[in-house]
Every structure is written in structure tokens, then in C-alpha cells.
Length: 382
Ligand SMILES: *Cc1c(COP(=O)(O)O)cnc(C)c1O
Image (cartoon, protein in one colour):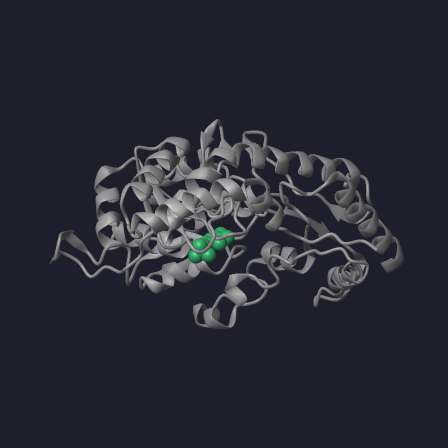
């Protein structure tokens, strides 16, 4: 019997559990649970790792995006350009601050926002661009920054899935004006709970975000803005400091798994592999293929991918669908009036994508069982 989970966090804990327990015990005994030296040192380490001067820890990747948008004074009447093929929070946060998300279609091979379509989406209301380095693959930041600079737009990088990824030897999160990170447990750098951070080289933006995440407080019990409570706690900070030391080796292991998938699946009919741009070094939060079939074209409900996935599940091989419906077609965004057919690549990709098991500790044996299981299913489904 196969037993290949799409993700397994227990193996990582087994590897470093001793170190984590010791650090956690120390925080518990210290009596300092919010802020303090643990959070300060993680912020310093993460800024250095990312290659920026400032890092502010916060409660989640979602809050990181909200802090970024608010520090840039983006609100009602403003537009922010982003991708329809991402986790909901990317667009949700734009709406949450009162602005309007404007979706630009994606590239079918990188799954990222298609930078060639960016300029046509810019209006006089556009304030910022929010590229999302989806599945850990960097967006073409050279082209994107060139367009943003020419139009005087801020760039907020959603790096929730891409911690450690490089574009032209620069870490994502250090290229735009602000980088937003999530430490949700399934991300490449995951806490044991919720956590997030923003990175920037702009001291004024950093100060603003630091104030906003602490109730808009400028000095103790003096308030300059309506903020929120979004702190990274000391327990998560010490855990993240330990895990940060392993991140590059874990990301290297993910790259090895991706290379194995690329090799074994490269000539399988009907399977389109994810593409890494030459200037990019991705970190493979997900390894996502597209299952193309005639059936898909005739049957837009995407039965082929779904039936392959169901059969894989039956044979004990886990897989995931990130994401089944693009954001412009979500019920909550009907009001934007961007109907079906308007962003055709994202819509088609949502019918075809399948994310295969991917985590640093995935054994070669299990990965091969997933690969042969997939090949079997494909042969049977055709
Ligand atoms: C996970 C994720 C977020 C949100 O992060 P949380 O820590 O869960 O709030 C935002 N954007 C993307 C692309 C994500 O994958």
C-alpha cells in the first residue's frame, strides 16, 4: 500500500524537536512572552537573511499585507494590481483596507502574474502592484520594477510562499518597497502557530508598520493612528530563529525533489511541468503540474484533473488543488464585475493544476511511488 502524504510536518519536528523544546522551555521560564529579546533577535536575523535593513514581526502573513498597504496609505478610491491566482489573502487585504484589487492574468507556465499585461491595467487610481511569488517561484522583478518605477507605483511583494527565493541573486522581499512573509506552519519557514513579518529598506515605512501593529502607539500609551494588535510572540520567534538556520538546506532539498519530478515527468503526454525563469531560483513551496486533456477542453468543469486526483487518493497518494477557482470568480468578488472569460489563462489553469507531494523530508522511495502512481492513473484515465 502506498502512503505518500502531500505534506508531513512531523518529520521536521522529529529532526529538530530537541532544539525547539529547549528554546521554548527557556522562554516559558523567562516570564517574557510578548516582545522582548527573542523577537528583536529574530527580526534582526530575518532582515539580514533577506538582505534588508528592517524587519517587523507580526501575527500573520495576512496582517503583514495589511500593515504594508496601510503604511503606504492605500485606502478607499485606490487600486492595487495583483494576480487572480493566489491565496485569497492577497486580494482580501487590498479590499480590507478599502482599496480595489485589479486582477491581471497570469502566465500558464510560471503561474505568476504576466508582467507583459501589467501596463495596460494601470489607471490614474493605481497606487501599487502586489506581485505574488506563487508556489515559491519569483515573478520577473526586473521587468516589474522597471514598470513600477516609470509609473511611480509602490511594490508590495507577497512572499508568503517564497521565503529564500532569489531573483537575479537578490532575495525576494528585498526588491520591492515592502516584502510580506507568512510563517504559517506549511510555508517553507513555518512557526508552530501563526506568524508573519514585513521587510523593507525604508526606515519610515518600517517605523509606520511597527507603530500600526501595536495599536498605532508612538510611545507608551500615546496613539497617533488607529492600528491593530498584531505581534509576533516570543515563543514563535525563538522557534523561527532555530528554523531559519535550516531554511537554506530545506529549500535545497525541495529543489532536489523538484528536479526529480522534472526528470521523471518531462515526457509524460498531457503533463505540463512548472517553469522556472532563468533569472529565478525558486524554493518550491509547491510542485504544481497541469494535467491537460481533450476532456478538459470539452468539459470546463475540470473532470479530468479531479478524477486523476480521486484515483491517486484511492491508491494512497496525496495531492492538492491550489487553486480551484480564481479570485475574480469568487462569490465575494462578483461585485467587481470581472466575469468568466476575462482572465482566461488563470481560469484554465485552475481547471488543470495538481500539486504533488512536496516537503524537504519526502523520501526518494515515496516520491517515486507518487510518480509511478500518477503515471498509472494517467494511463488508466485516458
Ligand atoms: C499563506 C499566504 C498568505 C497569508 O498568510 P497567513 O500567515 O496565513 O495569514 C498570503 N498570501 C499568500 C500567497 C499565502 O500563501
